[in-house]
Image: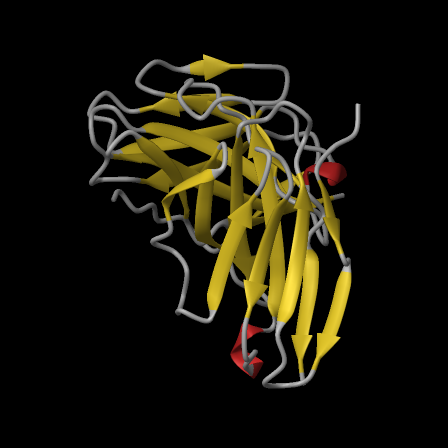
Length: 116
Length: 112
């Protein structure tokens, strides 16, 4: 079956513009995660969805970042008034049930965001 | 939230066992240890996880110390394709929700 997909794969934008990043999880996966990975760094947790709700938004770096998930499926991460420090690869992952021990996350290929 | 610490890099000869350590000294009793790896330019890939018992699957073995303050991922016969960044992760539980706290990772280089 299809894995996690993300679009666009690459996004170049100017400082101050808004961007939307999209994630299509594996069908039937109830849990969805967004991470950010700056060049040469590890993964930074941003937000977690269980269904359409986001019980944990603690990783969002500022109020310029927001995310939503509709229909328990597609998720959109929006960054308003982008700054150069927002440049990174944004990774999305989904899992079938975050309450189970196995809870393997399947990652998408990421969106590389470059803010000029 | 528990945090993990890992050596930044390691080398391993092809065909030998690669032993990757991780410290998670503040781990709580109900927090699992997960290992993922990230091959260049790809998303991370699940390897193995455990709570307190040692675990083995087709990819690797996970040894967790009795006090659960540290663990070791073992790749029994490393190949060149195992060259990657390996992340040791503690799955934190806060009010019934789950989030993954990635460590800095160990960059493993398997040498021919």
